[in-house]
Length: 169
Image (cartoon, rainbow, N blue to C red; front, side, top):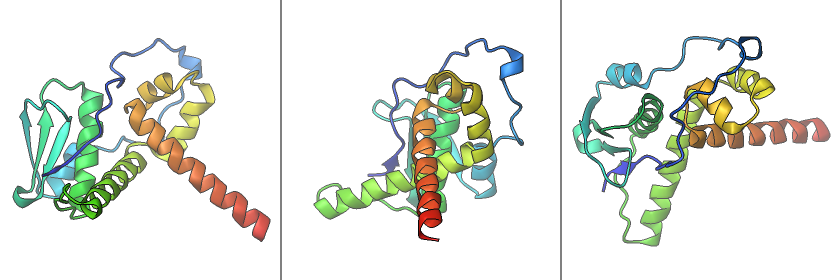
């Protein structure tokens, strides 16, 4: 079975009005998973999907994206699948414990790699300085709240490592 992206029903689709003086400008041009897929020679197709936003089909170099997603949902789902392709993730059997573990690890790795590319740390820190909620920060960063939570989890681990180094050093 192909690997699939997260299913975040609470994904951001509306934009709050935020005073211009509180909203920083993003550090650089945002990551484009569409460009990344094109550079890798991947094919993208749109289809009705019921249980997922997207699928990576390694045998065909194909990413299938669900019809009807918002731009932000599509951007995050596609970034996730591009990372499966970049890692040469293959299909893991879900019939065994080892297969399920393999699939879960691939999903976590794809989410984390996508979150790093979608949300540069400088943009994350800038948005968190003024945003009053995760929803507001996700909207400003053009990502789903799921991807924001993944990036925040990574950042927490990075900061914990720095603290450990300071204590040990």
